[in-house]
Length: 205
Ligand code: HEC
Image 1: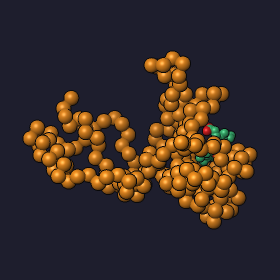
Image 2: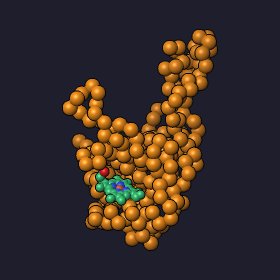
Image 3: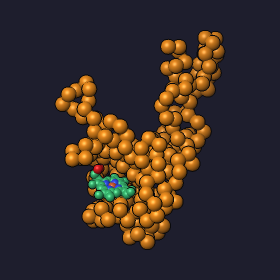
């Protein structure tokens, strides 16, 4: 393996743009980067990441909108985890991730109601036995991503104050057809008392 193969893929402008953590990270030191570039050039390498079968980080607009016009929130991969669950009967494990507004609200315990601008992602994986630890399970194949977008005014008409959308499989195919949200609403209605959420964000010390 060449030295270049171990370098992480450089983030594209699309990924960096709107990245809520950009401000928290120290900016890369230009002289270090220049030195690295010179070293790579001297070794006959390039700064390009190797092509891999792994799906690249998606930029806005690369995934089709949900039938209700909600756009896929491509930055979800950068969002922190707020809750974890396992549904034994469905053999699935799920994590709930949240954007910056949602994370702030969760950390302050202000989640009933969640503030406008909060977006929650529900990432569902097939439950899989952990090969290295027989008694443990882990997230296996990715099944789907479901999202709730809080905007009381924009989504007043469905009574929940949330916009609903789902994308299926590794290709992130938009789920459903016109009016599909009624499925989400019918089931989540049971928990309208906790602002339509089943999961409870965990508390961190
Ligand atoms: C048959 C019931 C049912 C339907 C239909 C359903 N959900 Fe859920 N949803 C759940 C349950 C139960 C959980 C929590 C358990 C878990 O994590 O699997 C959940 C969790 C979620 C979460 C994480 C926040 C929370 O409430 O815990 C999101 C986001 C979500 N669902 C979005 C959607 C969207 C979008 C749709 C419609 C496309 C939808 N759901 C349809 C039952 C349902």
